[in-house]
Image (cartoon, rainbow, N blue to C red; front, side, top):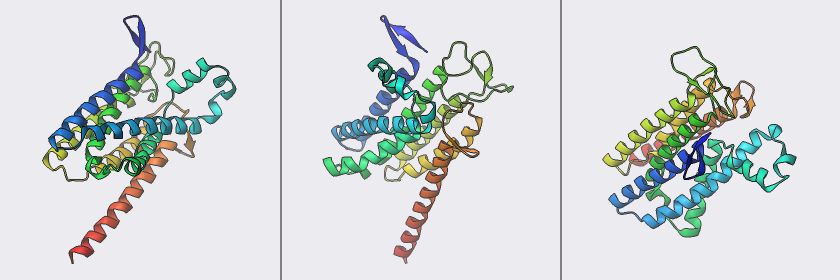
Length: 256
């Protein structure tokens, strides 16, 4: 699903991702300028985050949907392979891949990641929110059938079931992420030294865990009653909680 511009077909999902990347990057540049950080270093960080994020998101998608993909057909032609690359991503895979790349950036380019992590977290929330708008317009990651007052009805989606009321899980996630991005931005403007990434990860892992119960698409990997994303959410939440507890204990000991 998409629209035509100057004779070219522009898919909604790709368009929204592009809007998210560009808008978040521009906001990131403004925040860098405000705090006298290097715009060039932000460009390097973005290049790594996008590259490794793309790889991570695609790899996790391939893993959780492995049995549903016709691999022989996928590699039968370059056209089919390109089509495979252009569709189907798992956000958590991109998150893991992208932030894993930060360690590589720090090693290769000697960029002090700590100076940029707060800005990158804000940018991530903005780009993520825009991406979920693309999901809503396309129909991927669609919600369960509903009789409630909040719903989407798709007429010609090639992913979501059409002509039935579906819970707008993508729109709710997008709105929640925009609110989270605004909160993170306000926190940063008031205190740029406050480490905000745990706020994002804790909030999103809880949000994602809950929203997964309202998803209607089944081809996303499940383990028992939980989806792949719910399991990752629990791991993230547990890991960050342990990390913050350790930091708190160390801080308490040092203050004595």
